[in-house]
Image (tube, rainbow, N blue to C red; front, side, top):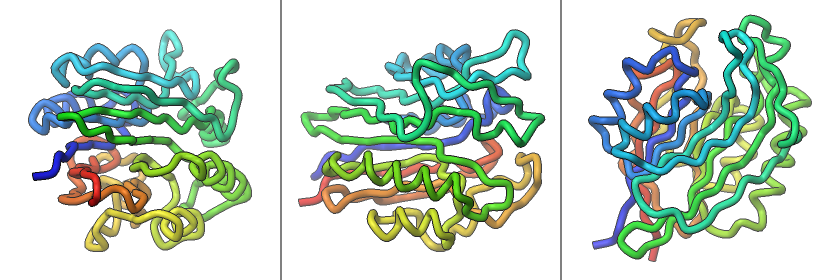
Length: 245
């Protein structure tokens, strides 16, 4: 029997839904968990919920609507040993942390864009998994910022070999930007799912946008993919990852 890795990817919307997110992760017990919009101050809460899982946190922006302002980014939590990885910026300057004001949409893209890699070993099998939180647009339509950033993202992905990529891509399936990823990598979210926005928790209510994804190269098999609502303004993406061959 092949070894599989249980993966969860979720935009947690900062600290707004911790009372839902944390019990969900305790019940799911993922091997690896990828969180977008994670506040640095909340890392210990997630490490505890994930049974002391190690964390790699990569800052993207300073969220100024908190007192004091909070550093927000992406986090990878792993219950298994990590044997290397990297952080590749396809936009921004890691030496400078932009300020983001959630009440001002003009600042929503004031963030560095890292592609975060980790090589996780489970039962002797090494899995290469990555995550990102992509450029936002107000209506789900591609703009020049997204076009520029997707070219850079694809450029930094090109030399990385076999991998699984998950995250919040802020670009709906069926559209220009998502399509550029889906033409190059396998889109593993079943077509029966037509949105990854949880309308009961999202500030704008229901939206017909499948913006969260899990892509893979031929060296990986991604199965048992589910979207789970009721945990954040985005649905949680749950999957099993194994190697092909």
